[in-house]
Length: 194
Image 1 (cartoon, rainbow, N blue to C red):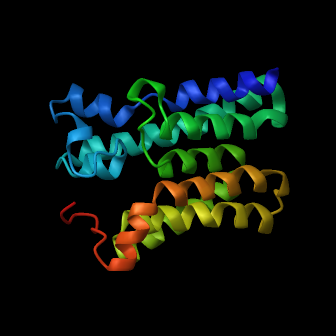
Image 2 (cartoon, helix red, strand yellow):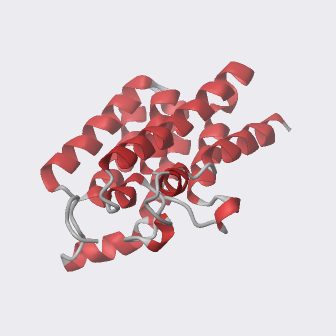
């Protein structure tokens, strides 16, 4: 039963839609009616409110980190993966928003840092490096998600590979429309039009 509690705990933490809350609180409108309709930091940036976008990114990252750290404090290492899957699912499929949430890139960063900081460091380097090189948020996020299970294997954290691989596959599936636009050469760049 404890694994179900860890999963549910992660889900509840992950389901808090910080992007939507912040944009409404600060008068930037309903985020679901702006740009891509996504509740993540990239879409918050499309409101023109860089501070709100940065806050959304940090809070979404903090959700992933908090869920893993709380699980470790309560149950040790055994249930950190369940909490990680739960917080990712909560962010991407929040019950409060009819299961239409974000795509999990920032939350996965927090998960990686929570599971093992070296994995988080690789995730951050790949994410930020690809973003700097291409200015394409989706490509940077997908690259980082793919890098995470590889980093877990390469850096000696094999027990985290399955959870991170599952999350990476989910990130790719959630970005399938972005992948189609990347193939067509129509995927918007950060700072460009949606």
